[in-house]
Image 1 (cartoon, rainbow, N blue to C red):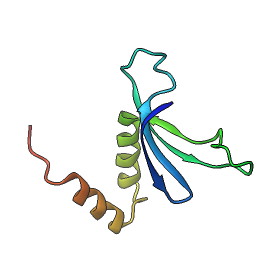
Image 2 (image 1 turned 90 degrees about the vertical axis):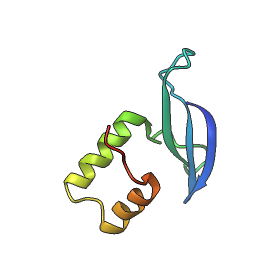
Image 3 (image 1 turned 135 degrees about the horizontal axis):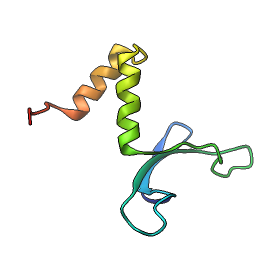
Image 4 (image 1 turned 90 degrees about the horizontal axis):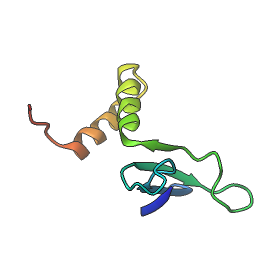
Length: 85
């Protein structure tokens, strides 16, 4: 990933940028939770996800009851009203 936006998050960072699979086409974006390993470097196990999969993961977690009500409410607040298309 080539980060274009980074913000601190818990013991690491949330990064948005050009996906590692983009290979310079500048078409594929992703989001990543980057946390440090014991040596202080970003762990190789940090997940990097395309946004469509991220949304599908949240939908699945919600449908399986894995998201507590306070997180669902935070998501609703962040998204705001959804207009019918």
